[in-house]
Image (tube, rainbow, N blue to C red; front, side, top):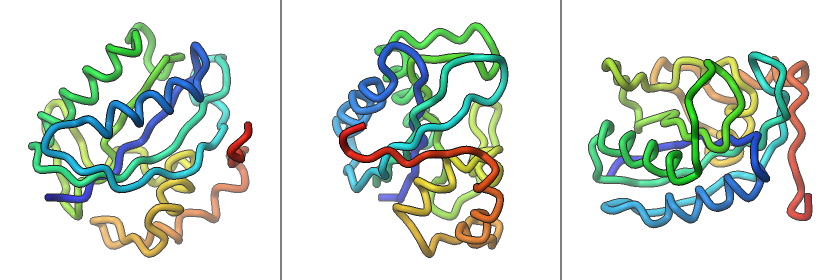
Length: 161
């Protein structure tokens, strides 16, 4: 089993319910053990004008191969009527493999650590919640990346919002 962190995001069709339902789907993945999820965070969209996102991070342990997990995540996105028409456009659900243990993966379909992990506070903050002492495969302490987060307008949601 390997520790895998997955970013979840949605900004269409009741975004909080989209990510909550996605968590339930992640819990059902074969050869995979559910470990934890972060709080939910609201963030402004990157890219074209669109609604705010609800984001979070899940931690699983899996025996699946990276591209098999990617296929499973894309199938969950399809179950949520994800349509890929615009780069960085609005979406019902976005599931990204952020980290695959301490491995660095680079294939035609998958780059891990996620290419923008170090820049996106809507990933950094929930990931830090799950793994406060995490070191990225490049040797950077995740906690050292939080200095930039004050400018990205990320709001942690409480259980009732």
